[in-house]
Image 1: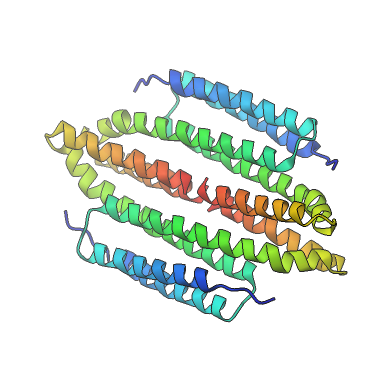
Image 2: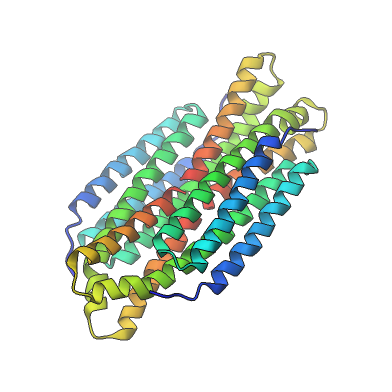
Amino acid sequence: MEHDHQDSIQRLKTIEGHIRGIQRMLAEDKYCIDVIRQIQAVQSALNKVSAQILDGHLNSCVLGAIQGSDPAERQRVLNEITEVFDAANRN
Amino acid sequence: MEHDHQDSIQRLKTIEGHIRGIQRMLAEDKYCIDVIRQIQAVQSALNKVSAQILDGHLNSCVLGAIQGSDPAERQRVLNEITEVFDAANRN
Amino acid sequence: MEHDHQDSIQRLKTIEGHIRGIQRMLAEDKYCIDVIRQIQAVQSALNKVSAQILDGHLNSCVLGAIQGSDPAERQRVLNEITEVFDAANRN
Amino acid sequence: MEHDHQDSIQRLKTIEGHIRGIQRMLAEDKYCIDVIRQIQAVQSALNKVSAQILDGHLNSCVLGAIQGSDPAERQRVLNEITEVFDAANRN
């Protein structure tokens, strides 16, 4: 199923630049706590991308699978949701 | 929609006892790091309960809503999944 | 080293009551997403207790160990901080 | 205080490549759940870098501040630890 991931890709490009900035902070021996805060900011930004991708997934693949006729496929997509939710809790 | 929550309730009873144990550790001035580790163990246990409840929800309410005829209801249940996933990431 | 944990104990008592409330929600078959949100609220409350206990620990045991004369003990308390930080990230 | 951040910088370079890979996955419309799992892997890798930087910080700046003669500075570095721990819990 086709999605429009342009916004997510753009956010990941920004995150990529952010991570390069953190490498520079380390190379310039910037204050460690400020570096850790920047890493935590990157993680918040990644959470937003994850939620955005999950949202697209629910409204396309999951919707399609549940309205489809294959019970095994239906079960599979639902199990995957619980699985990434569980991993999100642990991360 | 009716669920069998017996296992989740049982886990929460165990967690409740665990939290009482942590109160005792603090009252007896046990080593702080051990207390923090016990709180982290409780949080892992709560994550399991959350995942269990989400799993039940997906296989009942969400399935029902998506197979149902109300598009607004369908959208509502899907948005809620993204929302609790987002909160799980932040927690 | 003696701490005043009264506020943390009080918060844990409140959390204990909150968890009993969640058991009731499940027994009464309340809406699953509302139950998950309540579990997430408990986890936020536990995070606050953890941070409070770590704060007390840093200002007592850690301070004492670092100002003390035992390098192995000093190393031990610092390693423990990294360890609970790492676990907090994963939780 | 000078640290050797070579290993952390190297890890961040790897993470940067990982994030570029995730952009490609999105551009090629790869399965969303696999993309989310890759983002979660990046977040685990970032957690390791954070813990590594905190470890270096504790063993240099924090040690120096606590053994130093400025109580306000001592208090500041300890508060920062609690603060990043709290943010780690929420992230």
